[in-house]
Image (cartoon, rainbow, N blue to C red; front, side, top):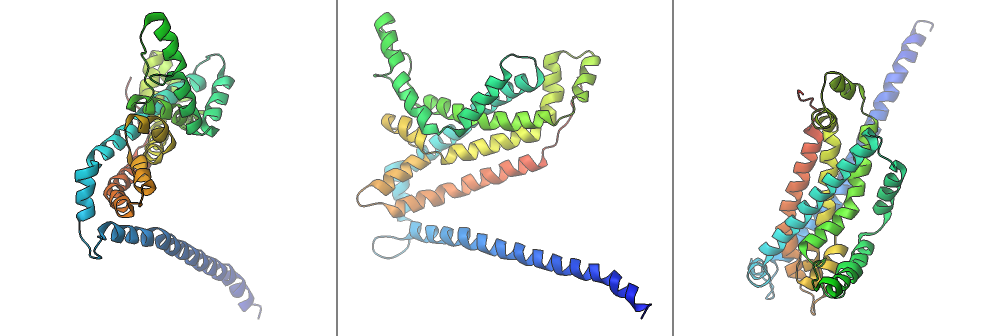
Length: 297
């Protein structure tokens, strides 16, 4: 009895750990199955709907009509220009502001942080509506004022550049908060060593600071592209009056027409899903693989 007791006590934790591992594995498998059912099953019906024709058969008529009558290629091109342009502008603005706030003695740092948080929690349609009143091509207050002074209306917020500008004002806050958090956790001894070695401040930022926070920048940029791709408010308010359609607004037109063109909406969704999924996978791969690298200064 006295000999068997230590064996039983030693084997008890291992049994409990094994049961716990089996329980966690069952939870993981169950969660994966639920997610697959909730995502793959609707996508299968989306593919079936895109192939359904009016006579009850299946074919590629919807894809042909989508390309010939509605210019799906141009809509997807506009979507990519809008997504990448907004993400690029937001990344440049957010990274620059984060470096200034975290690595310099620029004044009003708290104001910059508060402005970024305010832009993050504000809905993008609010900014879009504000700029309609300010810089719309005909009724904008700034355009009317300049028209009375110099006879020119220079600003047109209802354009692709206007859409990118307003969206970047919303997305830069996400980039700023992500990059500033990364900078606050980075050891400053690397930058101090570069300055001691004689590197100028700009060279220190380009060759030491930015490589150290490259994973944060890549992740913020990837999420900015994904958010821009699915954004509806800004393209609807600024793009639709100028007949600039992206993926979300074109889907809205298909669904709001009478009768609703569900088959065309499904065909457009199937057409753009591989491209968007590829970009998301590639962005996630870059965010996971990229590691900080110190370049020689």
